[in-house]
Image 1 (tube, one colour):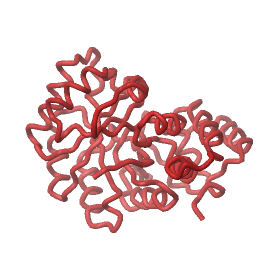
Image 2 (image 1 turned 30 degrees about the vertical axis):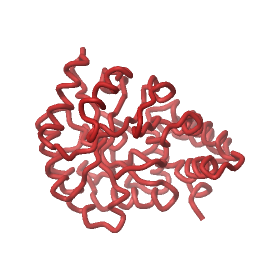
Image 3 (image 1 turned 135 degrees about the vertical axis):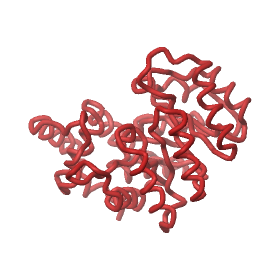
Length: 294
Protein backbone atom coordinates (compact mmCIF):
# COMPACT_ATOMS: atom_id res chain seq x y z
CA UNK A 1 0.00 0.00 0.00
CA UNK A 2 1.26 3.46 -0.85
CA UNK A 3 2.64 5.49 2.03
CA UNK A 4 4.25 8.86 2.63
CA UNK A 5 7.19 9.46 0.29
CA UNK A 6 8.59 10.73 -3.01
CA UNK A 7 7.27 9.06 -6.15
CA UNK A 8 7.57 9.44 -9.91
CA UNK A 9 5.02 9.16 -12.65
CA UNK A 10 7.44 6.88 -14.48
CA UNK A 11 8.39 7.14 -18.14
CA UNK A 12 7.38 4.54 -20.70
CA UNK A 13 10.18 3.37 -23.01
CA UNK A 14 9.16 2.41 -26.54
CA UNK A 15 10.52 0.28 -29.33
CA UNK A 16 11.28 1.86 -32.70
CA UNK A 17 7.93 0.65 -34.01
CA UNK A 18 6.24 2.62 -31.19
CA UNK A 19 5.23 -0.38 -29.08
CA UNK A 20 5.91 -0.53 -25.36
CA UNK A 21 9.31 -1.97 -24.44
CA UNK A 22 8.30 -3.64 -21.23
CA UNK A 23 11.76 -4.60 -19.98
CA UNK A 24 13.28 -1.15 -20.54
CA UNK A 25 10.25 0.53 -18.97
CA UNK A 26 10.69 -1.61 -15.87
CA UNK A 27 14.46 -1.00 -15.84
CA UNK A 28 13.90 2.76 -15.93
CA UNK A 29 11.56 2.54 -12.94
CA UNK A 30 13.96 0.33 -10.99
CA UNK A 31 16.82 2.77 -11.62
CA UNK A 32 14.73 5.68 -10.34
CA UNK A 33 13.86 3.76 -7.18
CA UNK A 34 17.48 2.80 -6.59
CA UNK A 35 18.34 6.49 -6.84
CA UNK A 36 16.01 7.51 -4.06
CA UNK A 37 12.33 7.19 -4.92
CA UNK A 38 9.97 5.41 -2.55
CA UNK A 39 8.13 4.07 -5.57
CA UNK A 40 6.86 4.73 -9.08
CA UNK A 41 3.54 4.84 -10.87
CA UNK A 42 3.40 3.15 -14.25
CA UNK A 43 0.92 4.64 -16.74
CA UNK A 44 0.51 8.08 -15.29
CA UNK A 45 0.19 10.91 -17.81
CA UNK A 46 4.00 11.23 -17.97
CA UNK A 47 4.14 7.60 -19.07
CA UNK A 48 2.10 8.45 -22.19
CA UNK A 49 -0.63 6.29 -20.68
CA UNK A 50 -3.51 7.69 -22.73
CA UNK A 51 -1.64 6.65 -25.89
CA UNK A 52 -0.67 3.10 -24.86
CA UNK A 53 -2.96 0.16 -25.55
CA UNK A 54 -4.70 -1.78 -22.79
CA UNK A 55 -3.06 -4.96 -24.12
CA UNK A 56 0.42 -3.52 -23.59
CA UNK A 57 -0.52 -2.29 -20.14
CA UNK A 58 -1.67 -5.78 -19.18
CA UNK A 59 1.58 -7.27 -20.44
CA UNK A 60 3.60 -4.95 -18.22
CA UNK A 61 1.36 -5.62 -15.22
CA UNK A 62 1.86 -9.36 -15.61
CA UNK A 63 5.64 -8.87 -15.86
CA UNK A 64 6.03 -6.62 -12.80
CA UNK A 65 3.81 -8.83 -10.64
CA UNK A 66 6.72 -11.14 -9.85
CA UNK A 67 9.43 -8.47 -9.69
CA UNK A 68 11.41 -8.18 -6.46
CA UNK A 69 10.47 -4.47 -6.25
CA UNK A 70 6.78 -4.98 -6.89
CA UNK A 71 5.81 -3.45 -3.53
CA UNK A 72 7.26 -0.18 -4.82
CA UNK A 73 5.31 -0.39 -8.08
CA UNK A 74 1.93 1.32 -8.43
CA UNK A 75 -0.40 1.80 -11.37
CA UNK A 76 -2.27 4.48 -13.19
CA UNK A 77 -4.88 3.49 -15.75
CA UNK A 78 -4.77 6.25 -18.37
CA UNK A 79 -8.16 5.21 -19.74
CA UNK A 80 -11.11 7.48 -20.52
CA UNK A 81 -13.62 4.66 -20.80
CA UNK A 82 -15.23 3.59 -17.53
CA UNK A 83 -15.41 0.01 -18.73
CA UNK A 84 -11.77 -0.04 -19.88
CA UNK A 85 -10.77 1.30 -16.47
CA UNK A 86 -12.73 -1.45 -14.76
CA UNK A 87 -11.33 -4.12 -17.08
CA UNK A 88 -7.72 -3.03 -16.49
CA UNK A 89 -8.19 -2.67 -12.74
CA UNK A 90 -9.77 -6.11 -12.40
CA UNK A 91 -6.92 -7.59 -14.41
CA UNK A 92 -4.31 -5.92 -12.17
CA UNK A 93 -6.17 -7.05 -9.06
CA UNK A 94 -5.75 -10.65 -10.19
CA UNK A 95 -2.04 -9.98 -9.61
CA UNK A 96 -2.81 -8.42 -6.22
CA UNK A 97 -2.31 -4.77 -7.21
CA UNK A 98 -4.69 -2.59 -5.19
CA UNK A 99 -3.49 1.03 -5.38
CA UNK A 100 -4.35 3.06 -8.49
CA UNK A 101 -3.86 6.65 -9.58
CA UNK A 102 -7.01 7.54 -11.52
CA UNK A 103 -7.92 10.78 -13.29
CA UNK A 104 -11.46 11.64 -14.41
CA UNK A 105 -12.08 11.04 -18.13
CA UNK A 106 -10.55 13.65 -20.42
CA UNK A 107 -11.55 14.75 -23.93
CA UNK A 108 -15.19 15.78 -23.38
CA UNK A 109 -15.52 19.25 -21.94
CA UNK A 110 -17.91 20.09 -19.18
CA UNK A 111 -17.21 17.34 -16.64
CA UNK A 112 -19.59 17.93 -13.74
CA UNK A 113 -19.20 17.05 -10.08
CA UNK A 114 -22.03 14.54 -10.33
CA UNK A 115 -20.55 12.97 -13.46
CA UNK A 116 -17.17 12.58 -11.79
CA UNK A 117 -18.78 11.09 -8.69
CA UNK A 118 -20.62 8.60 -10.90
CA UNK A 119 -17.33 7.68 -12.61
CA UNK A 120 -15.52 6.82 -9.37
CA UNK A 121 -18.62 5.18 -7.92
CA UNK A 122 -18.81 2.89 -10.95
CA UNK A 123 -15.20 1.84 -10.51
CA UNK A 124 -15.55 1.18 -6.79
CA UNK A 125 -18.78 -0.78 -7.15
CA UNK A 126 -17.07 -3.02 -9.71
CA UNK A 127 -13.84 -3.34 -7.70
CA UNK A 128 -14.79 -2.93 -4.02
CA UNK A 129 -11.27 -3.59 -2.69
CA UNK A 130 -9.59 -0.88 -4.77
CA UNK A 131 -7.56 1.94 -3.20
CA UNK A 132 -7.71 5.13 -5.28
CA UNK A 133 -5.42 8.14 -5.43
CA UNK A 134 -7.49 10.85 -7.10
CA UNK A 135 -5.61 12.65 -9.87
CA UNK A 136 -6.41 16.37 -9.86
CA UNK A 137 -5.05 17.79 -13.12
CA UNK A 138 -7.43 20.25 -14.74
CA UNK A 139 -4.99 21.08 -17.55
CA UNK A 140 -5.26 17.54 -18.88
CA UNK A 141 -8.68 16.30 -17.80
CA UNK A 142 -10.62 19.57 -18.01
CA UNK A 143 -11.90 19.03 -14.48
CA UNK A 144 -10.63 20.46 -11.21
CA UNK A 145 -11.55 18.78 -7.96
CA UNK A 146 -12.90 21.00 -5.22
CA UNK A 147 -12.39 20.33 -1.54
CA UNK A 148 -16.12 19.67 -1.29
CA UNK A 149 -16.10 16.93 -3.94
CA UNK A 150 -13.03 15.20 -2.49
CA UNK A 151 -14.56 15.33 0.98
CA UNK A 152 -17.80 13.91 -0.38
CA UNK A 153 -15.99 11.05 -2.11
CA UNK A 154 -14.04 10.21 1.05
CA UNK A 155 -17.26 10.16 3.09
CA UNK A 156 -18.98 7.93 0.54
CA UNK A 157 -16.01 5.59 0.12
CA UNK A 158 -13.72 5.93 3.17
CA UNK A 159 -12.01 2.58 2.52
CA UNK A 160 -11.38 3.30 -1.15
CA UNK A 161 -10.51 6.97 -1.67
CA UNK A 162 -7.19 7.18 0.16
CA UNK A 163 -5.41 10.18 -1.33
CA UNK A 164 -4.92 12.75 -4.06
CA UNK A 165 -2.21 13.78 -6.48
CA UNK A 166 -2.77 17.52 -6.77
CA UNK A 167 -1.35 18.86 -10.02
CA UNK A 168 -3.83 21.74 -10.11
CA UNK A 169 -2.47 22.89 -6.73
CA UNK A 170 -5.80 24.12 -5.36
CA UNK A 171 -6.06 21.44 -2.66
CA UNK A 172 -2.71 20.61 -1.08
CA UNK A 173 -2.45 23.77 1.02
CA UNK A 174 -5.95 23.72 2.48
CA UNK A 175 -7.62 20.31 2.30
CA UNK A 176 -7.13 18.43 5.57
CA UNK A 177 -8.72 15.00 5.87
CA UNK A 178 -7.87 12.37 8.46
CA UNK A 179 -5.80 9.44 7.17
CA UNK A 180 -5.76 10.96 3.68
CA UNK A 181 -2.57 11.11 1.60
CA UNK A 182 -1.98 14.41 -0.21
CA UNK A 183 0.73 14.56 -2.85
CA UNK A 184 1.47 17.80 -4.73
CA UNK A 185 2.30 17.02 -8.36
CA UNK A 186 5.61 18.89 -8.32
CA UNK A 187 8.77 18.52 -6.27
CA UNK A 188 8.96 22.32 -6.31
CA UNK A 189 6.12 22.12 -3.78
CA UNK A 190 7.53 19.14 -1.90
CA UNK A 191 9.00 20.96 1.11
CA UNK A 192 6.14 23.43 1.42
CA UNK A 193 3.69 20.54 1.26
CA UNK A 194 5.54 18.58 3.92
CA UNK A 195 5.51 21.62 6.18
CA UNK A 196 1.72 21.80 5.69
CA UNK A 197 1.25 18.12 6.52
CA UNK A 198 1.26 16.65 3.01
CA UNK A 199 2.59 13.16 2.33
CA UNK A 200 5.36 13.89 -0.20
CA UNK A 201 4.95 14.26 -3.96
CA UNK A 202 4.13 12.33 -7.13
CA UNK A 203 5.94 14.06 -9.95
CA UNK A 204 7.02 13.77 -13.57
CA UNK A 205 10.42 15.35 -13.04
CA UNK A 206 11.43 13.05 -10.19
CA UNK A 207 12.33 10.74 -13.08
CA UNK A 208 15.54 12.80 -13.03
CA UNK A 209 15.50 14.67 -9.69
CA UNK A 210 14.99 11.46 -7.69
CA UNK A 211 18.07 11.81 -5.47
CA UNK A 212 17.59 15.53 -4.85
CA UNK A 213 13.93 15.09 -3.98
CA UNK A 214 14.69 12.19 -1.65
CA UNK A 215 17.31 14.24 0.20
CA UNK A 216 14.85 17.10 0.68
CA UNK A 217 12.27 14.61 1.98
CA UNK A 218 14.73 12.85 4.30
CA UNK A 219 16.16 16.10 5.63
CA UNK A 220 12.65 17.25 6.51
CA UNK A 221 11.84 13.96 8.22
CA UNK A 222 15.14 14.05 10.12
CA UNK A 223 14.72 17.74 10.99
CA UNK A 224 17.98 18.67 9.26
CA UNK A 225 18.85 21.94 7.55
CA UNK A 226 17.75 21.94 3.92
CA UNK A 227 20.69 22.19 1.51
CA UNK A 228 19.18 20.90 -1.76
CA UNK A 229 15.68 22.38 -1.93
CA UNK A 230 16.67 25.51 -3.85
CA UNK A 231 18.40 23.44 -6.52
CA UNK A 232 15.48 21.01 -6.64
CA UNK A 233 13.00 23.84 -7.22
CA UNK A 234 15.23 25.48 -9.84
CA UNK A 235 15.60 22.23 -11.81
CA UNK A 236 11.87 21.59 -11.71
CA UNK A 237 11.08 25.13 -12.82
CA UNK A 238 13.52 24.71 -15.71
CA UNK A 239 11.74 21.57 -16.94
CA UNK A 240 8.40 23.35 -16.51
CA UNK A 241 9.40 25.70 -19.33
CA UNK A 242 8.91 22.81 -21.79
CA UNK A 243 6.47 20.00 -22.42
CA UNK A 244 7.52 17.66 -19.62
CA UNK A 245 7.31 14.39 -21.55
CA UNK A 246 9.26 15.86 -24.47
CA UNK A 247 11.87 17.39 -22.18
CA UNK A 248 12.37 14.28 -20.05
CA UNK A 249 12.73 11.99 -23.06
CA UNK A 250 15.07 14.46 -24.77
CA UNK A 251 17.18 14.74 -21.62
CA UNK A 252 17.45 10.96 -21.16
CA UNK A 253 18.11 10.40 -24.87
CA UNK A 254 21.50 12.09 -24.56
CA UNK A 255 22.69 8.93 -22.79
CA UNK A 256 20.29 6.33 -24.20
CA UNK A 257 18.86 6.39 -27.72
CA UNK A 258 15.85 4.33 -26.68
CA UNK A 259 14.32 7.42 -25.09
CA UNK A 260 14.03 9.01 -28.52
CA UNK A 261 11.05 6.78 -29.26
CA UNK A 262 7.87 8.65 -28.36
CA UNK A 263 4.23 8.28 -29.34
CA UNK A 264 2.56 10.83 -31.65
CA UNK A 265 1.32 13.46 -31.31
CA UNK A 266 4.11 13.90 -28.73
CA UNK A 267 7.53 14.83 -30.06
CA UNK A 268 11.03 15.32 -28.72
CA UNK A 269 12.32 18.82 -28.16
CA UNK A 270 13.87 20.44 -31.21
CA UNK A 271 17.66 20.36 -31.31
CA UNK A 272 17.82 24.02 -30.31
CA UNK A 273 15.39 23.57 -27.44
CA UNK A 274 17.30 20.52 -26.22
CA UNK A 275 20.57 22.47 -26.20
CA UNK A 276 18.81 25.31 -24.40
CA UNK A 277 17.49 22.92 -21.73
CA UNK A 278 20.90 21.34 -21.16
CA UNK A 279 22.58 24.74 -20.94
CA UNK A 280 20.11 25.87 -18.29
CA UNK A 281 20.56 22.64 -16.30
CA UNK A 282 24.34 22.87 -16.52
CA UNK A 283 24.04 26.37 -15.11
CA UNK A 284 22.29 24.81 -12.12
CA UNK A 285 25.07 22.21 -11.80
CA UNK A 286 22.54 19.52 -12.59
CA UNK A 287 23.32 16.43 -14.63
CA UNK A 288 21.81 12.97 -14.28
CA UNK A 289 25.19 11.50 -13.32
CA UNK A 290 25.78 14.04 -10.54
CA UNK A 291 22.38 13.39 -9.04
CA UNK A 292 22.44 9.63 -8.78
CA UNK A 293 22.60 8.00 -5.39
CA UNK A 294 26.06 6.97 -4.26
